[in-house]
Image 1: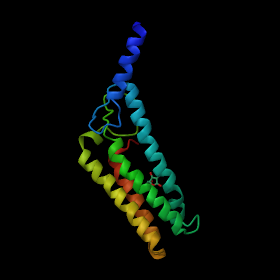
Image 2: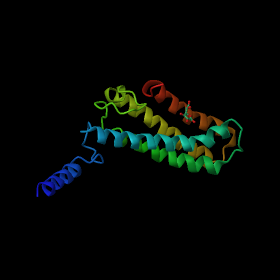
Image 3: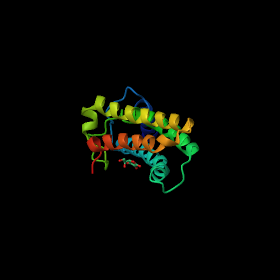
Image 4: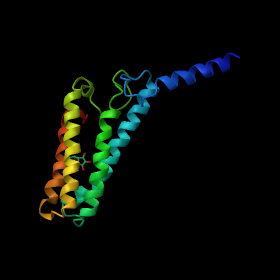
Length: 158
Ligand code: ASC
């Protein structure tokens, strides 16, 4: 009897504290912090995965391919749009390993401005690719990388 009661209680607690809720700031448990950090890392790993071939292309290690540039640019724009939502949960109260500096949550406007720069650079990449503007492809890829670096310099632990 007691066990059933507890089960219902926990199910309710989980449903009202879901991290998908944008009104929720600050996670309530280490378990939630771990999940939030796992999701954040997934977003950045996928951005990294999409930047990999573009970095190689900019260096001339693989051939110029505007279709890959455009496809990966679309993906990075979408991933960039996720950054704001996935950083809503403030995980700083829990000591879960993360490369994110706590200052992200005290400088949210600047952090989001930097993520917007990344989104804009990913859109520009798509435009340069769609125009088959080969003369500017390295610049467009480098422009994305520069927005990654600008944010890492301030908000990624090294
Ligand atoms: C990449 C990658 C980053 C950025 C950064 C730019 O390809 O994985 O983190 O570009 O190195 O300076």
